[in-house]
Image (cartoon, rainbow, N blue to C red; front, side, top):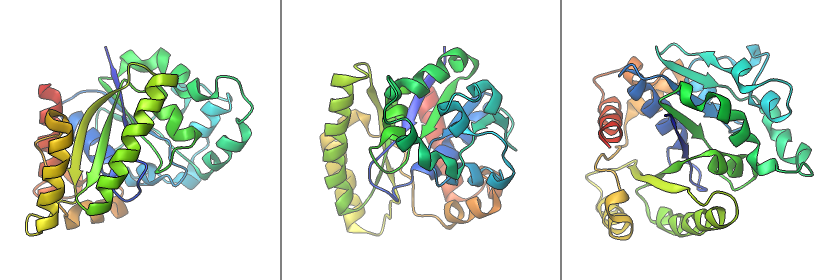
Length: 252
């Protein structure tokens, strides 16, 4: 049975899309069929996997507006076993267009249901906000991976996220679990990075992944080439850390 995992944090710039691209690609290398869903109107996940958004005839927007089923908008990526439901700027209109629609928070859940078991994992890349798009992602998910940047303000954001997840469990998705907390942009030379890591582990315990994602040039460069880090520079520290994270998740 497939598992749906949202990658979410209301704070921007913490590595959600970087994690979506590189974790999905790393698991796909183990010959597991993986689907990523780009629910961010900015479409960085889509372009980061080498897809020209201007050429797209169908996208997640068409699923939300019931023009196509999700099966119709899935496309292959350059990574074997990795597929994507792409995003376009049209997604900006979803929250306004669907505001009066009954059951609007379960649209993505309903769309995914027929295809869920076709994939080992479905990763949902959520926008950095708590609007209808993120809400749909969290309602559709079995669990959530929370990337946390190793800086002071991230600790404040974690408290807000914990309250958000509690709200969603109480109102929409009682089974939603934290899959794991992922520490990103870790700098071993920086005392603050170690302090943040210690505080997060103190609060979330075994939910924190052993793998730390470092600040790494390759992780920043790879999206501009439309590739995950493992295809851009497999020997880089960033690529190797996401491979380690994939192994950690598969081992569970």
